[in-house]
Length: 155
Image (tube, rainbow, N blue to C red; front, top):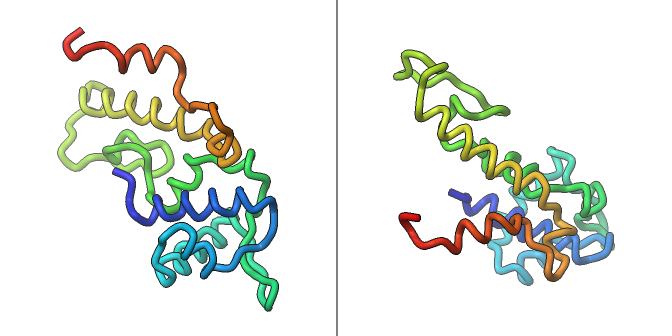
């Protein structure tokens, strides 16, 4: 599930992407996106350490994206703020950890299925950039995904 921290990070970075490169102060982003200021300050500090944003001090200071919006993906933001995309640790690529109760990873059905889930989620999030999310009419899902979702349950 998407944590509140990741949700707020996505909203804040989308706000910065809409600002066309200008610095925005935390108070403005907080008010516009309805994010508690203190929580946003901590999130922005994490995003700065991850080099997703840059900060400038002073009267005209604030935060701006560290790279163009078309080079920052939802997947990258979520991994920084939410941790692994995989639902179980043994299916994670970036945060792999063997499950304590698993006898054989090679034959584990849960690992295989959750690995497939991770791959699908990662594929969508890693191709969805801040810029593409802000582009009207651009959907991160493939047309065939829509057809699958439109099918009634059970076939």
